[in-house]
Image: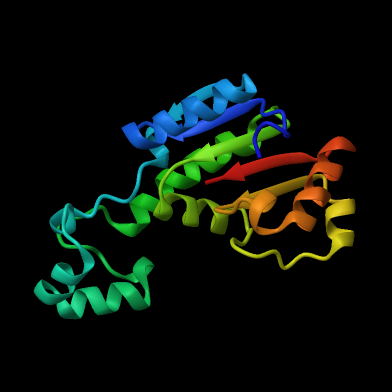
Length: 171
């Protein structure tokens, strides 16, 4: 997908896996590469390095509450959600101010979900009409590869970029 869209910037979490993926993507498109600690996953405190099953057994009430509403629950010894939100919001302002036309963001599920929420954009299958693609000045792909998952949408995205729309890819 990235070969057909000329990326100008690639932002990544400063953690190893995201950084490596972003460097690969940015080399393919010769995009400028930027790393940011603001894109790190939420710190899971006492839950770090544990699977969800062991967490749910050790902290059943807290875990159940977190599953229902992660923004309202503080993970034991973890990063408070408000601090996490503030951190990702700081990055969102950098992204919004960027002058790059086509941007990729490589990070983690939590930070990408919050980023999409902050930018008032959804994820997964598109809920937009074809007209929306034709009129949009900025398009964002969140956690999807339209070339393989939504080929018709991929064509519309390429057409929008060709006519001057800005593309942001978050994965």
